[in-house]
Length: 281
Image (cartoon, rainbow, N blue to C red; front, side, top):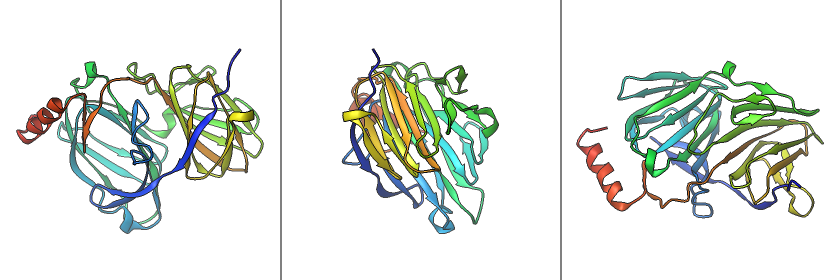
């Protein structure tokens, strides 16, 4: 018999800034929720004020994990020190595996208008922290959308809904990343492996997550952490509700992190700084 995952806790993000002063909301990676294995950080950025994003994210390094950027609105130019370059536009996703090291910049390619989206950090297991950097980067047209129930529309970024699979694949953590749209009263159920970590972040409207005693109403800009079970249940509370539903296999490894480096030991962190300063990225 399948069990609906209860909502263990819900919380709001905290105002933060990153890069050269870009204003954002940090949801995972805060004192109330430092991480959620294998997820290290979740930022939501969204503003109509150009001064909040124009400075962008100038060149900075990463080692030992993955960054996932999902653009809802706006245009962001990505460049790295290996000669890769790309333009993130509305609906596009960049899943970057930093591996042993990369130095990149993410700069807005607009001077006015709305900039909105998410950046998620996903840890890598010790066995893959020093792999070669790589990208899974796709435009909006590459992400299939399915309608598994009346009033439900799901964009599949990673994972599978019915027979519809997203293009992003990462065997290390087997991620699920769905953008779910719900009408008022519309219900969506999604099977997820019992051992996987799972959370949902409502960014428009409101939804009921879970069922019976494990249910909670989650409003816009709130994150819900799910407990054990093998399926997720969400129901729209108002028309136009949207949320991201994210899951992944936890690594259960020690985490040593400082700024843009996430390793397993303090010695590996020191080595990351030495390698970066010596230009070995």
